[in-house]
Length: 186
Image 1 (cartoon, helix red, strand yellow):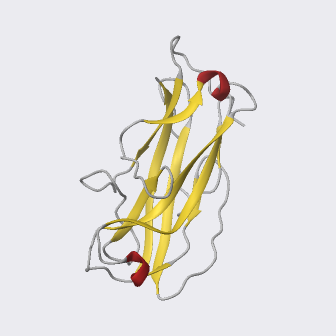
Image 2: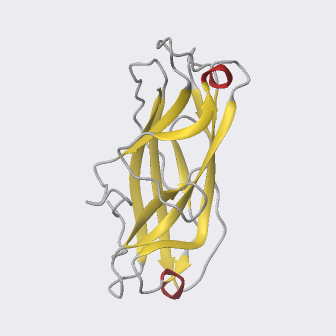
């Protein structure tokens, strides 16, 4: 176990392989997202680790709808446990997280389907199942340095949501995409 590790839990999509360390000495990792647009739905499973997979339950084309934006059906909550995140910055007070990916949309609100067969549907990250998190921007986790730096740590949760970017032009199939995350202090 790394001295300054971040244990990540439950996230939709297939597991990533990269581990990143920020200048503040706080670890990160890769998240792979996958899902399915079908005529039916089924159960979800997740796993744990710094690199992890978040599996969203399938949604129907009817649930995706025809209006572009976040799809609230079958949003999948995932939680990351952080501990031992000591900052090298003297005045650091808030632990932040940044999600990045080469598959980010131009408006930075969702991840494009990178290797699946569905069309017009991607994955958005949200704070509560409906409010999107912008990619490539630091987001406050609500965890202070004294909590993140101790051994017991704290949990931070987000949701993976389907995102309709095709409007009326969506096609059924699989959705697979990835994002990396890094924690840092400000």
